[in-house]
Length: 446
Image 1 (tube, rainbow, N blue to C red):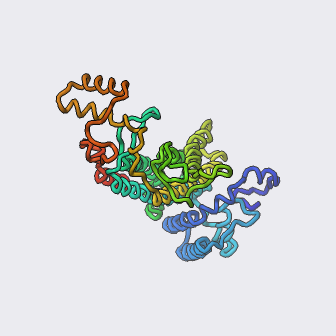
Image 2 (cartoon, rainbow, N blue to C red):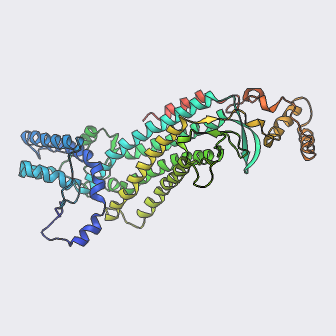
C-alpha cells in the first residue's frame, strides 16, 4: 500500500487491513476539504518562498482539476493507497513530477487530517443548524395554529392539569433554542485553524498560519501547536455533545408521539390517548390485529436518537488514557462520528416530514377520563372569588373523593385555552412564541 510515511519497509496485508479499517471509505467524505486545505497551504508556501509563483500556479491548477473530479463524483482512492492525503499527493506527483512532492512541505498528516475534519464539520454544523431551524419553525407554526386547543397535561403518568397543543408544540420549539446554543458552541470549537501545527510541535519553516486561517475562513488559529493537536477528539466530542442534546429533544418528542398517537383505525375514538393522528401511509399495521396503526417512524426515530446520544460517551472513552500528542486510536473516531452525523440529519428531516402531516384531536376533553383535569382551575377560581387557598383545596379534594366534583368555570368539552385565564409569560394564554423566535434568531447567528 502506498503511504506518505513509508521508509522502505512494508507492512503485512493483515496489519494494513487491521490498521486502515474503514478509513478509506470514510476519507472520501473529506476529499473536497483536503483539496481546499492544500490550496490554502500552497499559497502560504509561495508567500514564504518555499514555492515559486510558477510552481504555485501549476499546483493550484492541478488541485482545481482534482476538485472538479471530486464534485463530479469521479474520484476514488486507488486500491493500494492508504488515505485521502496520499491519493491527492499521488495524483499531483503522477501529473507534475517533483513539483507534486513539494505540497507536503511544512505540514504533517496530523494537522492535515485535523484541518480536513474541521472544514468538514464546519459545513456539517451549518447544515444541522438549517435543519434545526426548519423543525423549529414548523413547531412554532403548529403552536400558533393550535394554541386554543386544550390537551391534558400529565405528571407521574397521571392526568394532572390542562395543557394545550400550543404549549406542547411550543415547548419543543424552545427546547431547540437550548440545543442551538450547544450547536453554536461546538461550531466555535470547530472554527479554529490547526494547520501549521504539524505533528504537534510546530515547524522550523517560517509558516504564516494567520494567512491560512484567513484563506480558509477560520475565526482564529489554534495558537499553541500542542493545543492544536489536543483538539483531536475534543472537536469530535463537542460536536457529538451538541448532537446529543438535539437527539434528546427529538427522542422525547418521538416518545410523546408514540404515546399520544391513536393506535386504532378510528382516528380519535380510542380511549388510550388518541390525541394525534397520522395518515395511514406514515404508520404500519399488525400482521394479526387488523385494527392496529403502529407509530413505527417515531419508534425508529426514538431509537436512532438513542444511538446519537451514545456517540459522545463512545468518543469520550476512546480519547481517554492517552497522553498528549497523536495516537492512531484517533482514526477510529470517524467510525463513530460520521454515522452519527448521518443519523442526525435523517432524524431532523424525518421529524419535520412527520410534523407536516400531523393531525390533532380537538375533542379530547369529551372523554370522561379528563373529568378531574380542572381541579386546580377550580381551586384557583374559588380562591379568586375570596375563599382561602387551603380551604378551596380541601373543598375540591372532598368533592373529588366523593365523586361529585364539577368544574364551575364552564363545560370542559367546549373550553378553549384562552378561557382559563392563564396570562403569565409562557402559559396557555401567553405562549411567547415571538420572544422564543427572537431567542432562536440570536442563537443561530454563527
